[in-house]
Length: 256
Ligand SMILES: [Zn+2]
Image 1 (cartoon, rainbow, N blue to C red):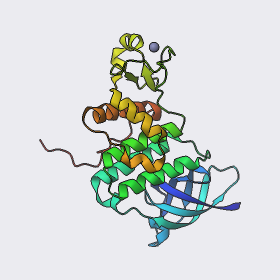
Image 2 (cartoon, rainbow, N blue to C red):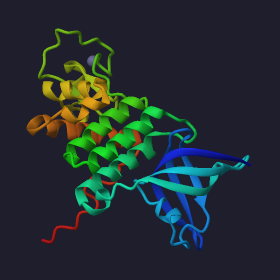
Image 3 (cartoon, protein in one colour):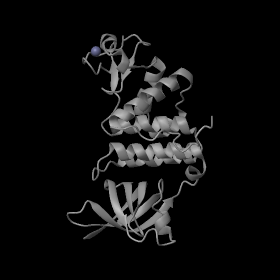
């Protein structure tokens, strides 16, 4: 057994046996990992509270040969993001962020960019930026960093390049193929395509390419925002292989 250390963010935590927890993290050095925290539920210590979702901590862990489950021995809290536990909209945004990271990353495949994107996304929510827009930007950015970058330069069905002269306003997005489709291809499968305005397309391209520090300046409202949310929600469902809990899953049911 060798002792390891890494910064990490808690994605999921569930009870295990009488007093233990199995926790899934996205870590800087090892990517997604799962570990057993023995006695985490017994102790009224910072160890247990460091294993709640959305916590940024420094982990000490052991790797056991032949076992994919790490043994977590210590977790020192770096950031707790308290607002993400107090405000429903912020909590929903943060839940979407960690759920998407859990869904699109593989264990033991580290990406410092993914770690920084998740940390940056949680910090943006905590700092009070608009939660719906922050979550949308995060999703586009993360998809771009994990091999699921939405394709915008050629038709994802027939491969035809769009080029600079492509008429704006006619773009269609296919969640199944993960990108734009040309008009003839879209007309063959109209039920599988979603409209994407020129403004929505420009927003996706900016979200993928601008430096992280510029992200908070990107804005989307009205039709652009609506198209983007519908396209990304459908695409995320395809990529994750399941419908992730809706962003408002914690909202109280509407009484009729
Ligand atoms: Zn085509």
